[in-house]
Every structure is written in C-alpha cells, then in structure tokens.
Image 1 (cartoon, rainbow, N blue to C red):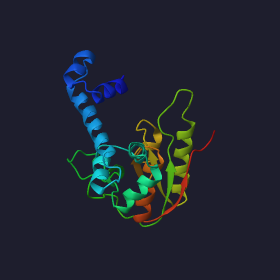
Image 2 (tube, rainbow, N blue to C red):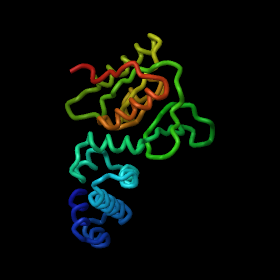
Image 3 (cartoon, one colour):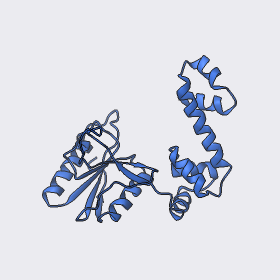
Image 4 (spheres, one colour):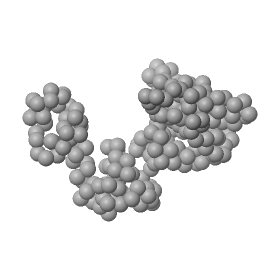
Length: 211
C-alpha cells in the first residue's frame, strides 16, 4: 500500500487527494512526497556531486538506491562518496535524556558533523548480530552472539555488537563494550568497521553463528 501511495504521488496525485482516499495523515504523505523530490534530484544529477550525495544521505538513501537512480553500481557510489568525504558520523544515545551525564556506549550513524565514538585503548572484535526476528527462526543466533561476546570479553578483548533489533539480548547494555544500532547491510557494517579502525583498531569480525 505504501508503494502505491508513493507511485500515486509520483504520478501527480495531490497530498489532499491521497489523504481523502487513504485517510493517511497528511504529515506522512508530505514525507513520502519529499522522498520523491529527493529521488528526482538524484536522477537529475547522475555525476554525484557532494551536494547531491549529502542531500541523498540526509534523507536516508542507501548507496544501492542512489546507484539505481543514477545507473551506477553500489561500489561506484561508495567510491565517489568516500572520495568527496561524504561519510557518516556516529552519535551516542543519551540514555538519561539530558538529565544526567550518560556513559552508555550506544551508537547510531548520522550524516551530521561531530563523531562521538571515543578512542579505545586496544583493538576490538566485532560481532554481527542476527537482525530482526523471523518466522521459523528461534533465538539461537542471538544466543550465539551473546555468548561470543561474553567469551571474548572474558579473554580480555573489547567487543563491538552491530545489530538492528532492540528487542534481543545481544543489544542489552552490558553484553558488549560498544553497541551500534545499524542495519546489517554491507554499506552500514563497513562504516562501523572504518570508525572502529580509526578509533583504536579492529582485530576481526564474527559473522552469523550456527545453522
């Protein structure tokens, strides 16, 4: 249904008309319309200027989506983006809502200005989480990630968990040294790899365990 709404707006339907038919709040329809406008701006600038890339990234377009709009591969888009210095920074979740100083190392990416990942004293080991729960999948993958982190920490390593599911045990505050709430895509994981390398080093990455 959301795709049909997006296509209707793309083909000239007004927000008012779509709201009348679907009863979706106009605020949400305005956001879909905005994404259509950004997509059109990307199509009109296939040479991928810095301004175009920053516009795309600040509105949530992945390298793959930008590539589809400009008939370029994801690898080409990534290369141009890095060459132009269009990189995400990682912010820290304020778990105290500014009432007290927060020390919990929960991070998320943003195309903002200041990186908030602190330098760490020794190289880390990254663990890729299991992502969203799926029908037919138990929690065995998340269980494996949790125990991998626990064993590595007992062995004296700093551990980094990358996952996009806040309902799993692996994203609890005390499981890993640092936690990144990020999609488990090549683009997003590699940006975490780069920031970990830049802030203290990375020994390696553990991928899906079991199955």
